[in-house]
Image (tube, rainbow, N blue to C red; front, side):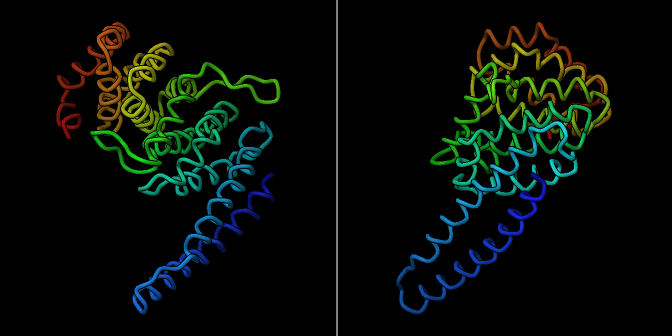
Length: 276
């Protein structure tokens, strides 16, 4: 799987170079004749197909316990980069092919590796945002569809693959917070992914996160890193976002210690970080 991943990565770089050349040629053609070109469309479709190829290789690598964690760590940021386009087309392909679920499986397979956890959380957060930065009034087009596909994976209890059940992204995020409570990087990345999922997934995703005791885990992370502005702010925003989705979710978030954790952080000098 690692050898296949390296080969696919090499192909991706070549296709990326060809796509950039095609875009440049198309722009020159438009400038010269005022007309478009089909070359860009063809190259983009080739890139999308290559994206699917990379996905298949990464899926094989991430879900095998004997896989080298370094290979997984290298693959996850590459997928996040592929997903990061403002229109959300690549994110939609990745999301509908279950990449958030496979990132969760990678975290469970390599549960002790903090770097796998960080990069998997960052990938899940990117997909939950539809590939681009979060917006307050909702997503549109492919980005919205991508976020919806990820939200569905959060609300599923388990995913069956080759007769084995693996936890969904929500469980994996909470497990990462618990396993790596002392690692500020993991806590911040998991909190950001939790916020993105609840913000774009709505009440059903928030309810599922609460079912997995996500707010309790976020509150513990805040207590473990009271002077880390990144952890405090991201955990606080995740807690408040989950709580804001419904009265019932707000009550459950308070029961899990969310309101107390945010209030305590503000009282301990974390108010500026939260406000920023």
